[in-house]
Length: 223
View 1: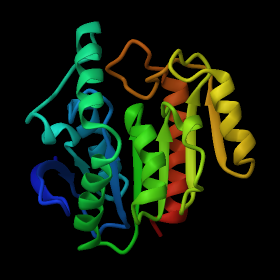
View 2 (view 1 turned 180 degrees about the horizontal axis):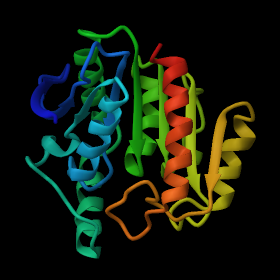
View 3 (view 1 turned 180 degrees about the vertical axis):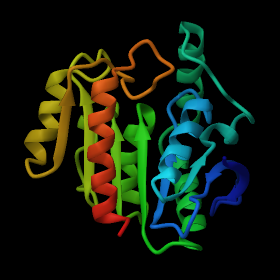
């Protein structure tokens, strides 16, 4: 359904992005922010599903700065490799790449939201502070409780997993305490519950979280 495009960040870095177009005129734009597993089939599938909802979608390949065409699965070895790539890239330069995707979307739409998963959930949180998006959604974002300030510059929706070994309950509580009016939800699931290619996939939680996400996007991006 989608196609691979080339994005150029403000520092001159070229990177690939997966673009998915809706069938009709887009109701808005969405940047999809990858997990540590690269621009893999799951992330492309998320893009396609959001395009089916009427959005123009781009997922930037955040690992292109260190190595091209990284697509990982979900084995222990893949997890180790993905963590290594994430540590090499860091959390600052992805803001440039997410901004590049946002700028590309704004050529066609007036409003742009962001959504990220795992590491991408953390990056979505940072995107709300550093990139000119209209809203952001984070799924089981790691270390959000360590970067509570400054406040996000746009509305944010956060989904967490109650059985998440990477995001303990006290971390979620810190987010809720700091931002009592923010939409923050917890689900009876493990980390990665949205991905139907992982053992931790939890269909009911994934469905409920996506319903809330689409409502949120309709309010802040779509019309």
